[in-house]
Length: 150
Image (cartoon, rainbow, N blue to C red; front, side, top):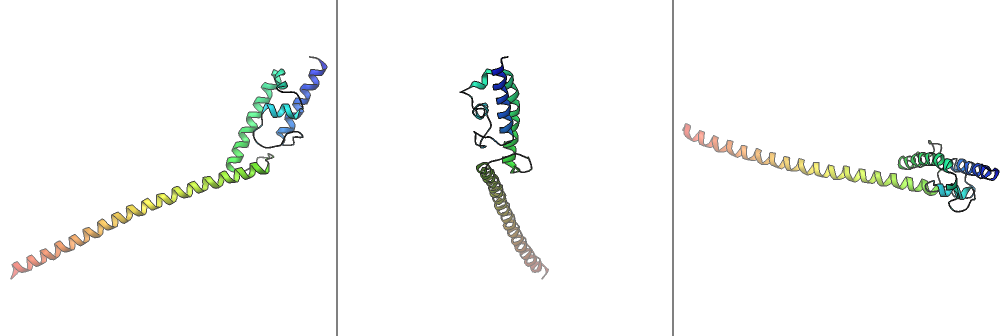
């Protein structure tokens, strides 16, 4: 490999490391990490990164892992514990997603509680009706029985 290619590949490795650390110089640390962002961070021409197939294979595994961890941290809201640099917009999106899931959970719980209350009220009204029916039967029997005793 020529000296120029070695220098360019070193620039790609440095750019990837900076982006994984969340300290990009030429790319804002927002959104998913891609090979294109690595290419831009290394200040190379369009799709120049693909001229280095070994680097692409190496970078893709790191990028997939980074994006997976980023998505998990956004879903859970644990960007600080993961040791990742997450932009303010991503933090707000994460908080919004967390609030939406909580609201959906509370709505389901509320709807379930309303249904349960409705079923309890129905059971209660059936029981009250049965008690009234039993009381009426008892009064009729007592009346009939007391009349026969005379």
